[in-house]
Image 1: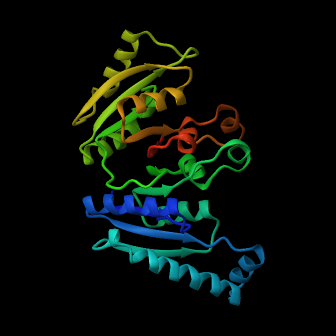
Image 2: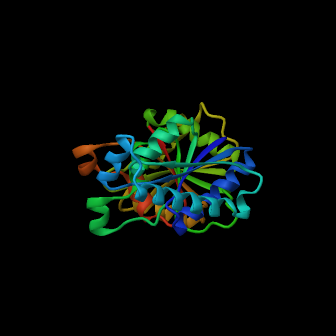
Image 3: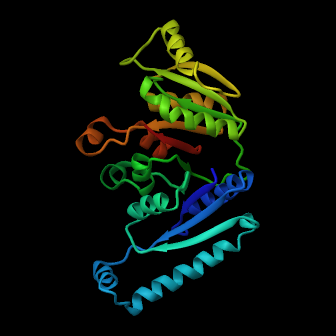
Length: 274
């Protein structure tokens, strides 16, 4: 977690994310890339593409620079290397491109979630980033104060395809010196006897060096409810999930538990791409 990307739209939720990123950077001697995307009207984009600068474009850019400078004055960033980036691009595309260009290893984003028709038809930039990012994404939903991860819940079916992202989960937990609570959610449509579930989890973790962990089986009506209810039951600090990055009709019909949690969980959520 040496290079942390924090996209900002200057909202309160984005400020919450920046303060968490600052704490992570300070603990790991890392740096922050503070990114603001300027999504301009199509005619403005045409002007940029043809090498012309409209007065309106410079007005937007200068306003963004001023607001970034205001963020830089936050005491939480004192002593941390911060690079300010302004990009003329759609928010999601810019976040993906900047993270790859700068070899970022963690994205920290603020999100207020989404519900109902907004969630179904529009979604959120955070949801898109969670679905597509190859690097871990930490979603902050509220002001955290001191960001400590003592209890870290990772919910999974613990299949072989999860082993690759799980290595990053273990690294994340160990760096925070967190206890990793590994939980398998039993649902009516996907139920495993306790002895079978325990065998699957014990076999899965055998090859990993986890500093502190425990295993759990939790029964609920569906996976999302199970994750949220289990997390509440132990008063966890962070929820971790792996995501498939499904697109198109497969995503529409199958949905994504990780994206649902990003929208509905109050606690921070960190996702790892399979």
